Length: 169
Image (cartoon, rainbow, N blue to C red; front, side):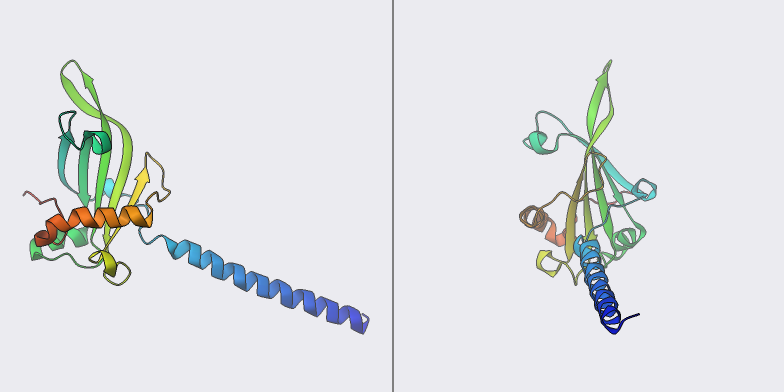
């Protein structure tokens, strides 16, 4: 191989390696940009409670339907200890309702809201990270402004560690 060809091959190889390294950095950043991943398997966690928000509620427009709340094992220890530790996760599963002959049942999923305790990464929101997944999708949907609204609302439950739901034995 001619000396100038060797230099060209080396230059292309170095450029390709630099590009690969920079792309890996971008991929790693993108992978970690969402603090709250989709909570796979959450329906196997501990069921906390169900409530139905009907048309008479002022919250019906934004959150009407059947709400199921689930907690992972770390969150369950938090109920017992009176303090939710990092790794606690709550899932708020919002479903539409279907009424048939006076019986109300669960309809299609509207959204899943998730709270994940991570004191280091979410220190500006009381240590809780917030996310939403629309319908049956697994793509994060909240903006930073929406996350701050979540935190603002949950501050009303500051005496319970920003958690509204209570576990009933």
